[in-house]
Length: 277
Image (tube, rainbow, N blue to C red; front, side, top):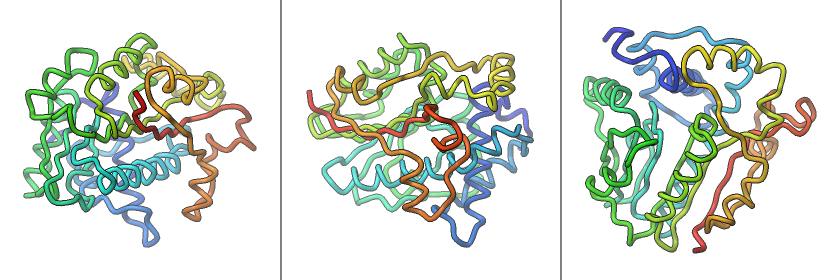
């Protein structure tokens, strides 16, 4: 498979950088998760050289992956029989996590990225450990219609995951995204997401990253100062988990770009929420 099978610009480039971090972590003897497919994705598309900020963020990508893995695991054993991963990227949770019998996982992302992903997994003969249903969609368009057509039951509690997406959308698009999730989220549904505050975007270590993202049509377009309040206004009871807590829990150093001792008020939010309305 050649590098032009997967567009290595914009959000697809970001998905590949995260896959590289997951592949590197999976090779460790003390790994926090095992993603046996990440290396195949990167080998198929071609490894790319990341800037200094990407290297500094690798620890965050690893802790973030474990945080969301654990979220989905808890949701699947506490009443949610289906999950939706929006902007699924090169994530392989449908294959590598131990899902309960009868669990359905919907993955939504851009058609070209999903085609590449399915091609690599198909070539490996990989079999999902749940009922995996890919949904090819631009999340700025009418993706709920496609999700429902794929079989999502909005009357049943659902676990929703929005990883590495919201900063690339403008505030109105994020409002619409959460409104649409809310219309499909029955009582008992769970939500986990990632976003950043304004101070994080202004970190001098990220200046070169922002410049490159602008040239690849993947600029960050929004920030969130108080995710708990923002979600409360939209019918969710939320809490945040700082990377300092995750690092201590898993015996890892705090990632430099998320360490309050180094970056002050800058925050990359990791949020978990339950549906309240």
